[in-house]
Each structure stands twice: as structure tokens, then as C-alpha cells.
Length: 273
Image 1 (cartoon, helix red, strand yellow):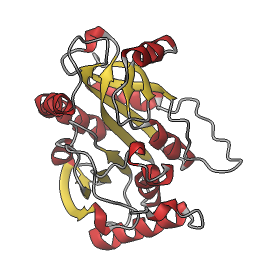
Image 2 (cartoon, rainbow, N blue to C red):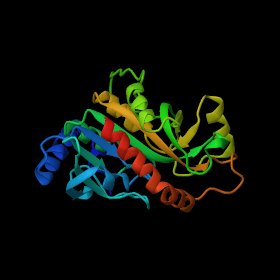
Image 3 (tube, one colour):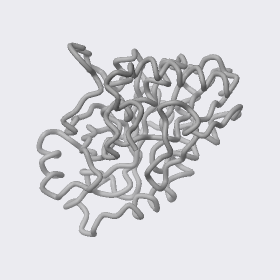
Image 4 (tube, rainbow, N blue to C red):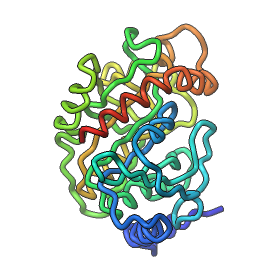
């Protein structure tokens, strides 16, 4: 079925505003100060952030649809943090490979901005190029390389991506865990995993992490004026780096194994923002 946002006559920012208005109405929260998209392995962090005041099926909100990936939730949660601020936790990510168009991919981010969020936390499960990251390392994203051949920006809209992944927020993360490493995230289109040759290409051009999300969302978040923190759970070493075949079940298992540790880490970081 054709996605609402694929209609070129529709203003995606107007739809994002409608979605934000619906979230405010259904949640009773007029403004969210921070938003988080929780990828594979990160979902349990929502339970540790604070008091959940509302949980809405994402498909009930305009522009959202049910997640197509096992391991991803399907709700939008309003959580009252200990400092009194409100966080919008997005458990419904649309991936570029679902072929709904880039507008649908970044709709959650644009909606978050319309709810009032000034900080966008983007997390994912990804493949690691550095061998030392085997075993479920949590890595800060310092920059990205977008290999999707697409952008959420439309028209002559020139957005500066310098310091896209905030140095300030990365410093806060290291206050919680000084051992956190960082790297450059490379977004491929997917849904197939990268070939060993593609992984070597990513390494050659400066990449450390490979995945199928985040970069397009980060661009849209910057366009909307948000400050961005990106974090990857290295669920596996990338093709050609590890000797065994890649599988989505491996990603799910690695996420489950790391869930408690990374959820606590992320909740503590958010508490300091």
C-alpha cells in the first residue's frame, strides 16, 4: 500500500505537525524536550528513563506504520524524566529499504521536533569493522557517510552537517562511561547485508560501523534544528571481518544479551542531558 508521505502534493512538515498534535492530545503532554529512537537492543532503556505517562500504538498516529522488522517495537511513549522533563520514545522506525520513500523514514524525527524536542537520540544495532568491538560494544557515532544515494532535504535546501553528532552530547556520554569508543557510521540502503568488498570499501573511505538506518534521520534532525546523539550497539562484526555468515537472529540475540547493560547506560546519559 502506498504510504501517505509518498504523495508529492503533501507537505511532510504539515503531516509531522498533525502527528505531534495527535501525540499531545492522546498523551496529555504538551511538549517533549527530548526524543529517542530505540533500535535493535536498545528498547528496554525506555523502562529505565522514568515514569511512562502514555503509550500510543504508532499506527494510530498519522504518517506512522507498524514496524516491519522483528525486534523493533511499535509504540510511541511519553516518559516523565526524573528532572521533570518529558521524553518521547519512538519504537517505530521506518527503514529506507521498506520503499516508502525518505519522507516516511524521517517522519518520526520531524514529528519529534514538532513536539518540541531539542535533542534527538538515535540508536541502532550495527555491524562493526574494528575487530576489538566484537562481543556487543556500545559505540558513539562521531560522524556518518550516507551511501543511500538519497537525502531527506528537498529543493535548494543547504544544511550544514558540521558537528552533526554533537560533541557536547558525546562528552556527556563519556561522563557516564569514560571507556566509550566512537566511530564513523556508514548507512547502506539494505535490506541485504553488506558484502565483504563493500565493508572494505566502507573501511577505506573512513567508516567504522555499517548499518541500514540513522544517517538520513540525523540529517532531518539537523534540518529541524535538533542536537543529535548517535549510538550503535555492535551486534556483530561486519561481513569479511568475522568468519561466520551474518543473520538477523544473530542481531536479535546480541541485542538481548547486551540489553540490560546498554539500557542502563543510555538511561544514565539521558538523565544528564
